[in-house]
Amino acid sequence: MTEQPYATRPLRVGVQLQPQHAEYADLRRAVDAAEEAGVDVIFNWDHFFPLSGEPDGLHYECWTMLAAWAEQTERVEIGALVSCNSYRNPDLLADMARTVDHISAGRLILGIGAGWFERDYDEYGYEFGTAGSRLAALAEGLPRITSRWAKLNPAPTRDIPILIGGGGERKTLKLVAQYATTWHGFGDAETLAHKNEVLNNWCAEVGRDPGEIERSTAADRGPDEAAEELTGLGTRLITISTDGRAGYDLSLVRDWLQYRDEFNAGSSTTG
Image (tube, rainbow, N blue to C red; front, side, top):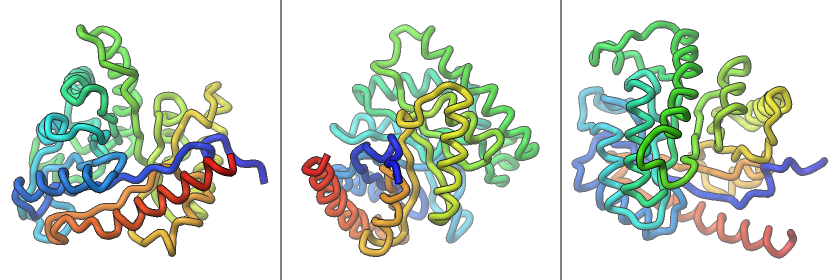
């Protein structure tokens, strides 16, 4: 089997510090611990209420937190997994991202998706619409974001990486091929393998090198169980999630960091 071009990238490990069921001081300590442990990316998420556990439990907003993380951290990339396109005017979101990019000295990833959590929409006064209308809004928003970046003064410090989450084969993966630096997919190995091929086909359609798009997914198992399967698919960004109920436990993250270092060392000696 020919190795896919995106599988030649180094393996990276992210952690999603879910901003639910914790005081902010706990989140701040978790950010410090994750950076010190050596993660490549620290993500939060873009919701207004917890997604699990007590539905009205402690929770914090995404982008004000990312600005604070940009000041707090020194090395790691930061971003939302993922920001909801529907919650902010795309030009405003572009300006927010550019600003956090500067605060962090070029470490922001713009994670973005079409949105899905109906309670957020209802309680904050956004039109929920349909999956199709939200995807159409994302398709309209992405070129506005990239166009706004080109107009801002000062410009972003770099071409801000765009991570798109989702797996819709007719619309979402086409947008990934057109705009994304990273695709974050969901599902089992068979599903991810199929979606990779669909994305590769869209890349061919739009004239994009599929090797330019990093493949990303989440893991809730240790590397002994999941690493061979995921890396064999060409996945090169693996993110582990934790929240306040778990005390922002990083033990699984540390297992993956050890595997990352061994994997990348082995790749460099055989490459």
